[in-house]
Image 1 (cartoon, one colour):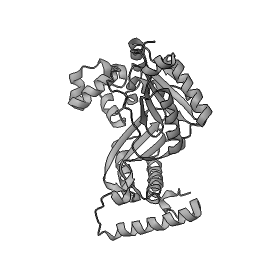
Image 2: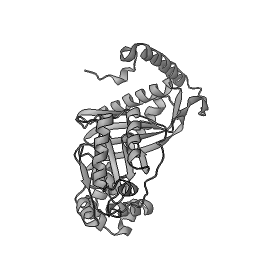
Image 3: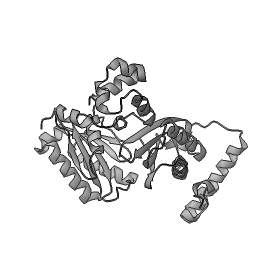
Image 4: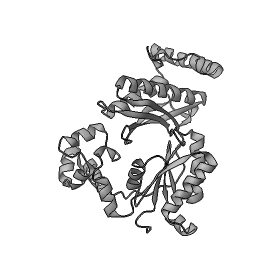
Length: 334
């Protein structure tokens, strides 16, 4: 295996067994372990990272597969965190390889022929940036797999999707991704995730969970005296593919109704219709001290009432925990 063939690792971190989500502190500690292997680490909150191990291969005298196995051992022993790892020549293929692996597995796409054979039967939903709405549009033209998408002429895709998106998707369908691994620290953020007991079809339940997540994030932001400038929604489906959408908030906020409204907009943008959803994760991005965030004064009495109610809920939750006050809309009706 040469550096050119497969030196990019997509590492998905999770607790052994049920695959429970990581707390922010556990994720940060896992990143420190990855940086012991290579300094070229790109955090992908809330539970993944990209690694370029070309230098590490030379330093340790091991190839990418051996380094991936070493990473699994280190995270398990030091943090009780397991890894599912994809290894390929670029971030796109590494991510897809990881997504297609069983939890705790290591999958390698070491040459272009193997990559093409792997990509061809995948549904177009497997490609980053393709949500259910785009998949339905492409499916209407018979482009329901990555292989068919790769074989489609570029002008055809550009007529269907637009010039920029069509070109980008055409490259991705062929397994081409020139994006480098960008080192750095993760943007200050807070995350919350809900894993359904079963693959959930009901959009009402999807929205109820989003309300629960924004309530949780809003409470954490307010308790910490912080505000978020953006939200990112990640939905994982029954076939283990994911869709991600992000949106900048009108202003940095910790106000639950504002967070909820944006979360619902992100959900609607996915265009889900009878989608079997396995989990939903919401991440508050670009978190900063609330006193440094600009705020547009509102003369709406309902908004003022909601903010007073939030303050009461936060105080009772701090004192009594989950037995305190909460919004009635968070409870299921029997």
